[in-house]
Image (cartoon, rainbow, N blue to C red; front, side):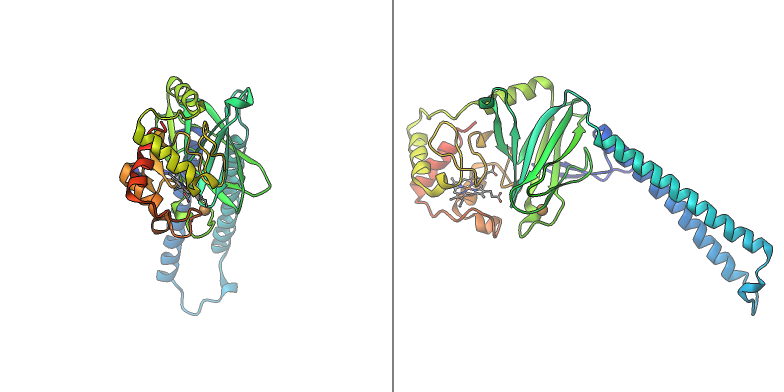
Length: 321
Ligand code: HEC
Ligand SMILES: [Cu+2]
């Protein structure tokens, strides 16, 4: 089967035609069936049209159509109805199979924001709750139920390699479930136009072994430590003295706002700004100085920091593993 795999180097694969889990595989086989049958029907219609125009009788009126023609027309209408009913049944069956999650699934909540994703793993006790952004980790081969909500406008969660789309609607909770059968990095994209930076609203999904997933989750639970290094410590002071604290959380410090992504483990993430840039020092510097050049309209203002302060701030952010 032809594979169209759009691989963005740092933000995962993105293709509905190369399913990596049972839900996406069902959607893929439904679509294969629909397009093959539709292609055969189209070919038959075009062939009939060509035949009819080549064998046209002069001055023939519709009421002169013979019994043979009538049989063909009635047969074609009947066949069309049967094909449409089969499509309907398969569609319904696929929809049902996708809506009922098995017990014991991994639970995670995703909130859509203009223009990024907040990802929360509930904890028991509640202090075990993990909050991160733009990166969803899941264990391979296990069902994952994603609860979806929005805090501003309608967004849509769409990881084409894993499952279809589900809208995130303000004031409502929807859910979708999927399972990744192959380890790897997959890309989800907001699939409902949600304003200026809708296109730059991607979510990286990392499917990994149960062991690495547990280790990742345990690490994400930790608060940030005050850095030992003096430059990084100065960076922490810059962060806490700047406007950053009005919008961001770094657990373990007084910064506790949720307007922007939680930065407690920023350095462990592969991308910044919802898959827009790889998480490197240079990109981070460019983003902090002027996010409006990278994502015009985004909800983070420019920060004209002095060079020394910026350098210290970057050193600090790099300690947030
Ligand atoms: C008015 C609120 C606001 C202020 C002030 C602010 N930010 Fe942000 N920040 C945001 C929002 C919103 C985003 C998400 C933007 C997006 O991806 O569209 C963001 C994204 C980021 C990211 C990328 C995080 C990720 O995982 O994608 C970093 C890093 C960051 N901010 C650092 C800072 C620093 C450092 C400061 C202070 C110098 C700061 N921010 C000030 C709102 C703010
Ligand atoms: Cu969108």
